[in-house]
Image (cartoon, rainbow, N blue to C red; front, side, top):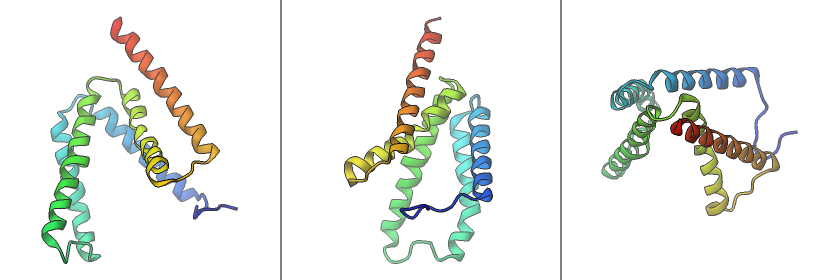
Length: 151
């Protein structure tokens, strides 16, 4: 039995996860040689265009404190989204696609560490094991990148 609010694994969920992973891999590999700013701008503009009608229909647009909401949305769009992805795409030109994809896995690892340190969350043995495997993979890839750079 699953605990802690976890949901059962379904074939549809696994399929969507695999589709998401394939799409992310495709973006990572195809954008290595494209201008980072163009990819990020068009990707986020397209995403916003697709989501805005759904947000409007669902009543999710800022109400009440509109100025504060718009400023916060602007910050979220500029810094943790556009800047972060722009740097990610720029980094793709420097490291290999595999290394970039594995490095991007640091995001959930850092989030887990922040959860433990700042929020007092506890990690399961499986999560600690996954973090250790990810750390080993990153160390191995970093060593390989350094060796390739010296050659």
